Amino acid sequence: MAATPHPIKLALEIMDAWLGLPEYAYKATVYRFSHKLPPEQVLEAVQIAQAKLPDGGESAFKYFCGVCNCMIQEQRIRQSWN
Image (cartoon, rainbow, N blue to C red; front, side):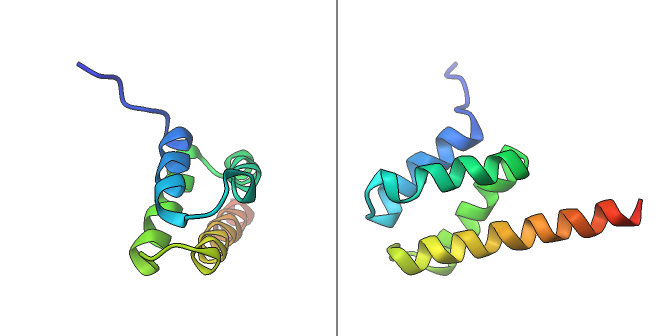
């Protein structure tokens, strides 16, 4: 039985095939988001962006960043409630 790849590795693989951008254009950003969000949420953000903008490109990457930023903001709001 094959092991399931780490969510960040899977997110980068999806982005590599989907965005059509050089890896240096998004890899560092993905790792920065992975320090602020759980890896599963970063993968979810990739999937949301890919569903919304399936053709990829710079606008799809920006949309992914917006999804991650919204998730971070939501996380901060939830933490402030506690």
